[in-house]
Image (cartoon, rainbow, N blue to C red; front, side, top):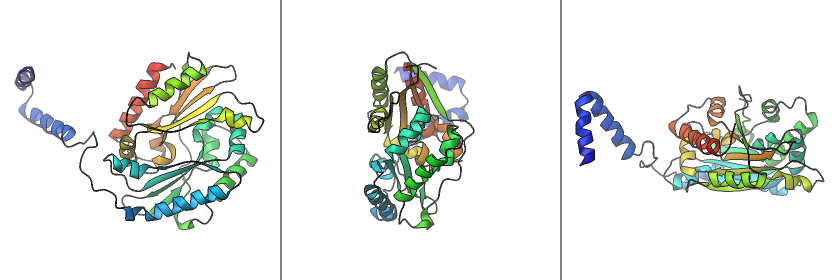
Length: 313
């Protein structure tokens, strides 16, 4: 009764054309699933995954046979998204450690953990069906974190990539040429809690939405101990919600290289202060020349709201 009364009162003040357009928009959003991702879609046939699956398996085998590499995770963004009703063409990532290299990089700057583990993205373009294997080269890492000349580290990084991609058809290999971003595209907040409490809070924020998967939690300080190196505390949380993530990557599947899975880094500086860092996805989207769609904006807004409410600039 109350809602009917409100609707009737609104009709007295809103022109009929505007009111009609508003009603149609609401119907599309609520029942058509425009923002909720509930619209009907045709599932991706398993046959469409043959090429990307084969490349992922090749890379995974290479990593297993490379003495310095260790696989961390394989994430099939497409199948995960399609499972929850969000259509995304074949898009998969492999993430792997070169622990000795990582320890050296993190001695230079703890924030470089946001680029780790090393990632390879394989996807089939939704429009042309072309399969691509893409990655970030060391120039991008160096530019984003202002490392300057690091010849030996650059060689180790590139050698890791070569070992992981051994035997892959070169016609699909495509290093991401958009190596620069105008800003670091990182948001860093300070925590008044100790490191362990901050990490627990950050993980809980990631899990606040029940559709979120926490793929891994990586303690780089623990890795460094195995190499006799003392690092400040630095832990990376890898997580994501397949539905919203799949819709966000529709704008540009290569976003799966930088933005997905999402990352939150909890770290201590040299003075023992604790900080929380995550990606500014809209700036990363600009790097990929991707249109910033509603799903991407919603993900960023949720991240900002949740983390800035718990921590401080």
